Image (tube, rainbow, N blue to C red; front, side, top):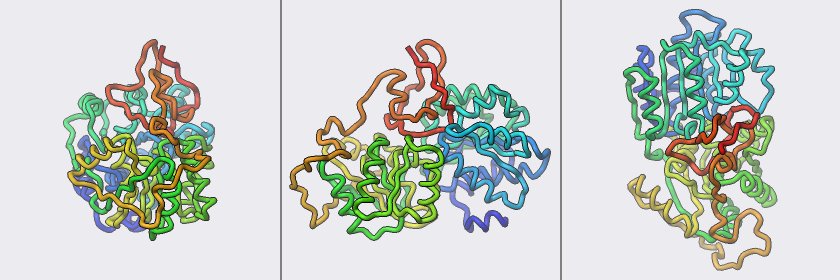
Length: 432
């Protein structure tokens, strides 16, 4: 309980209340809950309890996550909760040297948190022993499938003991996940916590605006709003960087987080945001599942996301731990269809707001580098085949695809692929 109290846990969340008992009984579990509901502790606490008994110094629990940031967050939470247990953990993801990871895996490591691609690298090189895995967790399963990691997951599953406990946590339950759950889980208990709806502790507002006024409106909005810590989402890596630069020029303490940054740069940005050194973090959806910061007061969608699920995950970064938060979205006429989809899913009409002293009729600036002037350039250019699949991913986030004509995704595909995962920097075979 020392680690639990140290991390500020006092009252269990609904997902923890419902998931922990069956996990402790050794049952396989499907956990469906939105971001920010306490899923990590829901599986970490029972795993720590289980590992207190039995052999030490070998990998007995494997947690697979889609991104480096989420892997680090899970690792930090698990180590914090288990501080007094003397259980050791390690993270495994791409974009960094394998040597320190190999050294950790050769030591007294019981819990490994890994991204699929780099984990396969270790498996193929024989630098990790998964023969004694007792508990497997697939966290943020829907995001892993959106990013094309289903083939990698199935390869990993073939290397694990068949007699194990399997826990699958996801925010949504598309057909691909249902099929995988049917294949790998044994008589699972399903725990569902309003997983398709955004948190009730978050208030929502839309700010209609023309494309060329987005930057100016954003700066004005920040000037008129009492904020603590602000997370701003953009659709592309380049726009995240340029928006952050504009905010700095306007006097804000801001930084960006996107796939073109090195792992050290990304970690520095996250650490600075957590500690309050940066009041504003501008990010692509790479941050939607990997930031665990309780004091985010506002989430601002500079670009509206492509799916209702992505909206849910983005705004789930605020209103955490029973606190209240605000979600603002800058919308153009081209976003009307997505706005209607979000309102339908939420069962409510979102408030439209205007800033009184903002000139919405001003002509476009002569130089508008960060926001496209034409509606058709608002979204990234669509591509087909493997080129489209990797168009916005950093080199270490591309899943492996083998064989002629192999398709990286199933029926479901999220078009905002600007995530970074822990797969290897080695380029995959391209489908032809």
